[in-house]
Image 1 (cartoon, rainbow, N blue to C red):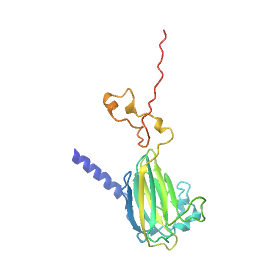
Image 2: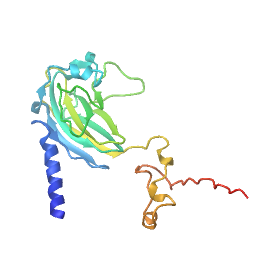
Image 3: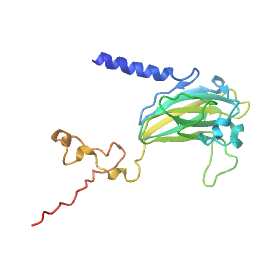
Length: 230
């Protein structure tokens, strides 16, 4: 039985890896850990048609910022599990380099890359600012953040630069953490802590409706007892 399960896991993993087009670097991520990979713009390719990014169904970056992405695009892929936050940062080896980054979420059976991307769950981008932002500073690094609440997603990351940016070393880091539960989610009581649960379940450590980020002990809710007429 264990052999069958192991083969199934390997088959599933190989199928997922095989789904990505050639040239995409797949990155394995784990919650609570930071994954790091090296890259170079010369390993990428130009994406002449950037209209995908300004579509309302993608909304990655406006057409007015296309010039920030006229260089080679280097693609990476990973996955984000439910109840997670992901911070993706690109750091060029040359601190004077002008890099840009974008990342989007799609379904776990979707392996579409730009410029064919027609829609996605969400897309975030970061590039050199046109003007200073109040209370913020920008250095040579670029970061974007994604999150997943109830469903897992494939994540595609693109590293690029302005016209002429066709070479240059960089480091990509992915920090995957547990997401903060939505408002009110921590007030829900896990079914295992219910007074009607089985003795085996009641001895198990209770959890917050599947959310691992809820602090403190479980707050149980009690229903008022119904009074029988005398």
